[in-house]
Length: 251
Ligand code: PGA
Image (tube, rainbow, N blue to C red; front, side, top):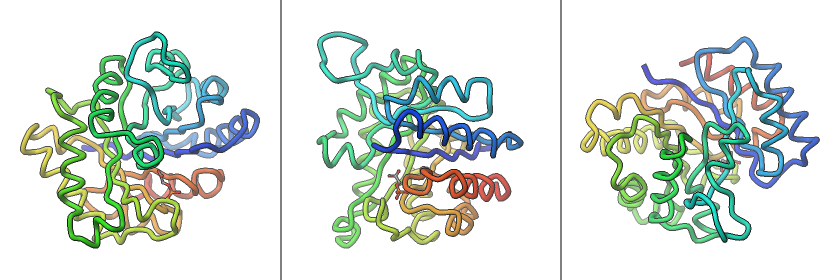
């Protein structure tokens, strides 16, 4: 049985005080929900404080990025060991905003995925096509390349989560239809099955892009959609708890 996962990507939002208040509200509002994974991804500056709040609860923590070296002269970067030290169990890697604004390549993503695994963090590796790529009919070429290159050299995918986030759906209010998302999720699982066999059926694939408590029901009903990576709607406790409850009921 695959595990459902709901992750809230706060992006570059929330002060420490705001982060603590939001984390507390999510922890309290979701305390009875046990069988999936609820993950919060605060900005780096709030990881320590949020880590203290969620300790011992059913809520886990992710960082939004990391560097692929252990330590050294890399001004401004954060290592996976530092994230573990703060209580992170997960790390988001290769988000489309990182690929677009910070020019992260598939090769960077691959180095980060491998280093996260070596350090004992579970990578949430993001893939997804742009508007233009979808219109050209090359969605599967793009997503297939990102998946294969991102995981290149890995012997196992036991501790990997993948998030399919069509770039045109992120922050736009233009959510993919459940059929569009299911088609790409099944395609991703198919690619993984070719290289990793049955392990592909155990891996959770999350959908991301304008998810709300109103539209998550149709998406989560699909066979290969195992949860959600939520941006905007994860910044308010009520909306995020609504998404968590919808998923926990349906999966
Ligand atoms: P959104 O962001 O929910 O605001 O579209 C999703 C994401 O970027 O992970």
